[in-house]
Image (cartoon, rainbow, N blue to C red; front, side, top):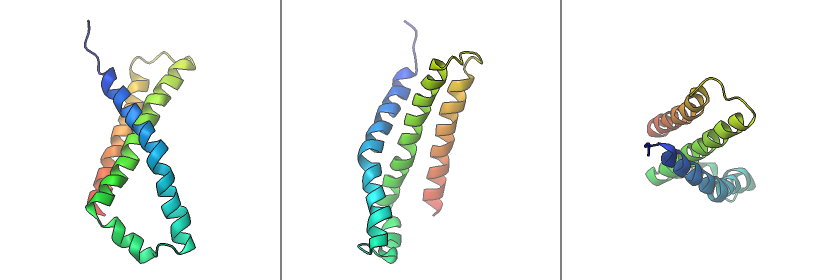
Length: 111
């Protein structure tokens, strides 16, 4: 039986779906409702964003849904009939997710 990297992509797909389902709504409530309503001040939000655990949370919130998107989009493209190009759709989708993850890590580490 040939070795495959599919379990890696499927695990990232699954983790991204869980993160998107559970943590994105909480983040939306905090940033789109609590701050404008005055429950959390801008200064407190800024101080919160300086904490390493919050930056790790944001990194996970950005990177895992990117892999969820990449895996889903790869198979949508295949289902739509774009089977040509060999590994091109796979490289573009997962490459974009990897690039987004690296950029998120850089911006969160520098910011």
